[in-house]
Length: 240
Image (cartoon, rainbow, N blue to C red; front, side, top):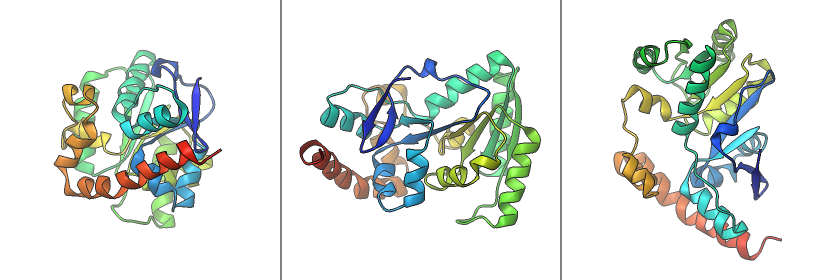
């Protein structure tokens, strides 16, 4: 598996078809410009990203950083891309997939849609409480739901950095071969939110499309983008 190091982050730089399911545990996370900035002031989140088995470049900002700092051309792989790929693998091999996160109504929509399309997959679902911090009881219930199902692939959809930190803290207690944090993809699958059209994605403007869909994302990009560009400049010209 080819990778590229950016500020100690080992970024996946290979064909998505090179990702496969093994008997051991594989933790897959994504990184973009915003998460790069957030991780600078969140040590647990930073460690979760650094210790990922596979860290996907989910953002044109990371693609730009690789080109500007390392002179390397890498391909963006979004959470939606890895989700689609793993579902195909799971369907081909008749595996078990579990979705942890989001609301019960969203999970119902996901189940209804995916169970019709991927008939060889056994699906499981659990909606955790909607809160900033989970209690010990919450964590126990979540782990029990996952481990009793014993999925081959566990998809986590609790938004970053919450989802990555939860996995990092509990990874030794999770019985799943692949653990993949994909955040907003739960909403894309359920179609409660729309991903950018393919032509927008091909123009590398998915981030702009998303910023128009929610004020929260507009504020996020306005905050993190200038800081990220400063980091690119520093890495290019000052970091040895």
